[in-house]
Length: 388
Image 1 (cartoon, helix red, strand yellow):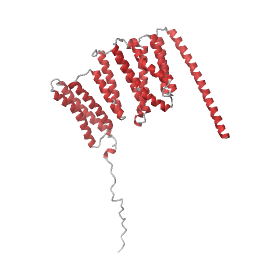
Image 2 (cartoon, rainbow, N blue to C red):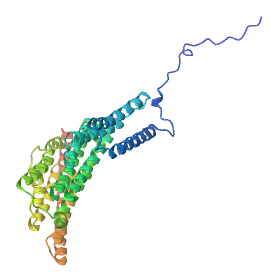
Image 3 (cartoon, rainbow, N blue to C red):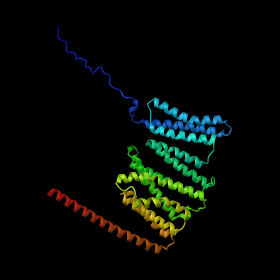
Image 4 (spheres, rainbow, N blue to C red):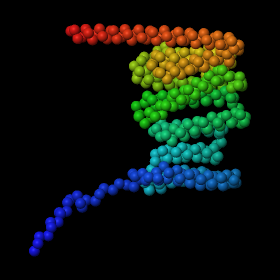
């Protein structure tokens, strides 16, 4: 009997089943998870809008309990759909952040319709304040986008109320709120640059963008107040409130300055901080209160110089650049605001340009001398250490 060929012995690894991965971890080509979320969210939104339009037609005839239950059904459907999707392996923190924002909006609509009706701009302010909580908890992009959209919506509601005379506010309120929001976004972006929480780093780009928009709005008010600030009739209480709104948006930058100064290894208190912070506090209220070219033009120049001074003292390139742009915009107020004829304006701008060109050359020469002196001192110190 011939020996049959030896059969290979079963190995221990052959009987061990391969480790399987959940289906949710794979991204199916052509069917990404975002597509499923988008289609599902769109379908749910269409259903909710359809139901809402139907209820709106008979809203006044509905019982209060029906109104409350109808509004509460919106967040219930949102989170119920999210739970059902999560049970099938579809989870997204960004989608949960959007649902949280929508739920907060529904709660405010419930209060507005069924409890106590507030002016729309006040309700919008409460809505924006609530949206601020989510980006502070975690850097969800959808929460930041929702906050930006809420800020824009609040400004539109305020403008609509002022233009349609639905509220007794002056257009000055709109400008102060716009400038305050842009300043707060700039400060928030700067905080994202300095914080140790790495997830916020991508939002640091908002700082120069928001501050540039702030400078554009501020110097537009300096140069064209006759078109943008037609009505300045406000009571003393209203002026105090406007000053408080602007003051809060500036003072919240003080803790940010302390962290920035420590990172730059600079002094916590300096004359540049005093100049920049002091002029920032009074710039917007004075611009709104005083509509005289002989005062607003020097204020614009002083604000620009304080930016350059602070940026140079604490080594902030983008703030120095913003100060130089602000100074250029301030120079445009000479022909456009002071009523100087074109030839006289050209002479003044030419003199200013020549002065700053000479200053740039002198600063560059002084900087080169300082660098050369530091190199000579360093070489002497190295030669002395090698000689010993």
